[in-house]
Length: 326
Image (cartoon, rainbow, N blue to C red; front, side, top):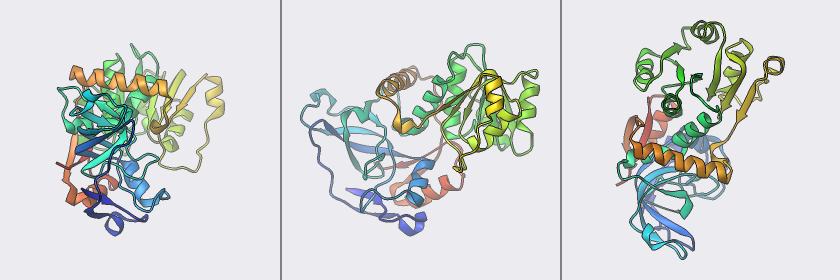
C-alpha cells in the first residue's frame, strides 16, 4: 500500500517519506479500513516534530473516513463493507491513517451515517470528539452564555455549533474578520478579535459585567488570565483541552475559590469508556441529523502530505485540512 511515514522527529520536509509498505492484515477483533480521506490535526504535526517515536517507523494521523474491507475473528460479518470514521488511529500505535489502509480494534471504526461524507468523517476523531466533550463538560447550556476560544478553528467551529444547538448564546474569539464571518455563519452571536481587542473587557461589556457561564478553551496559558480578569461568572466552568505553553501556567486560585469556579481539563485520546461511548453516540446522532457544518479548509493528495503538514503548522487553514487517499 502507499503510505507516508517518518523515522525521526523533525520538520515535515526533512522527515516525511512517501512510499510503499506492506498492506496490514487483521487479527482477532480487528477491522481493516480502506481509507478514502485522512484528517490532519495540529497534534499530528506536533507529534512529528517532537514526540518520542514508539516504533522505528511512524505513519501519522488518527482520523479518517473509509470502508471496512476485511474483518478479523469475532467481528460481526455485517461490518464488512461498512462506511466508518476512525478515532485514536495513531494514539499509542505506530501506524495511523496517512495511508491507503489501517487496521484497528473494531470499536475504533465507528459506523458512519449514510448522509455523511468521508470528508466529514475525517474530522470527527479529534475535532468532533474534542468539541463534543468540551461542550458536555459545560453542563446544561440552555439560556447560558459560552465563550469559545478560537471559534473559527477546527475544534472551536464544531464546539460553537454544538453549544448553539444546546441552547447557548455563544461568543467567540477570532483573529480576523474572515474568521469572524466563519464563526457567525454557524450561530456565534458576537465575536471578539483577540489581536485588536481586550477579550476580558469585551466579554464583560457583552455580558453586562457578569462574565460568561463557561469558557471552552484551547489555550489555557492565556485563558487563565481571562479568568483572573473576571471574564468567567461566579460558579462558571472552564472546559480546557490544550495550551500553547506547557510551562504549567498558574491557576488563579483565589479568584476560583471565591467565585466557586470549576476547571475541567481533559485529553480527548484518554476518555473513559463511558465518556467515549456517550460521545460516539452523540456525534453520530448529530451527523445523522445533518445539523453540523463541516468546514474543509484545505485538501491535499497523499503526495502533498508535506504541504498539508506545513499548512496546518503555519495556521494557514481555516477549518479542517484533509488528505484524499482514494
